[in-house]
Amino acid sequence: MKSPVAKRSIVVAGHKTSVSLEDAFWTSLKEIAGRRDLTLSDLVAAIDSQRDHGNLSSAIRLFVLEFYRHQQSEQQEDAAKAQTEKAQIERAG
Image 1 (spheres, rainbow, N blue to C red):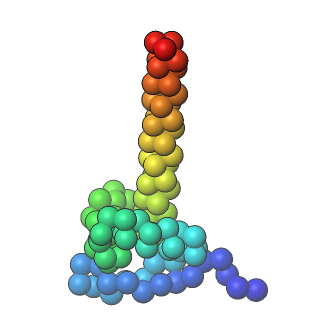
Image 2 (image 1 turned 135 degrees about the vertical axis):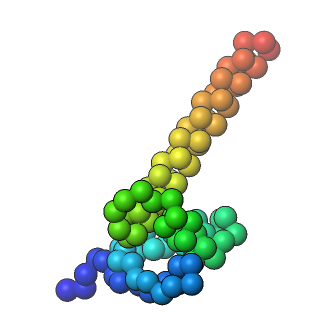
């Protein structure tokens, strides 16, 4: 049976290292890097430089989780604003 976690090599700040991540986290990390117009190595280097403790694989998982939590929060705020504006227009009209 194939492990859900795969070890991947990446160059971070000029040094080759490996991270063990599930495919979903790896794919998400690449998508985030693309959205930010960064190389995968640059994004991982930024994550690495900001982590306080723990291993790099865990730091990447937490980064991806926080990215999508923040995105979800922004979408909910936008929907609430749109609903409020719609209600105001309906009351005024």
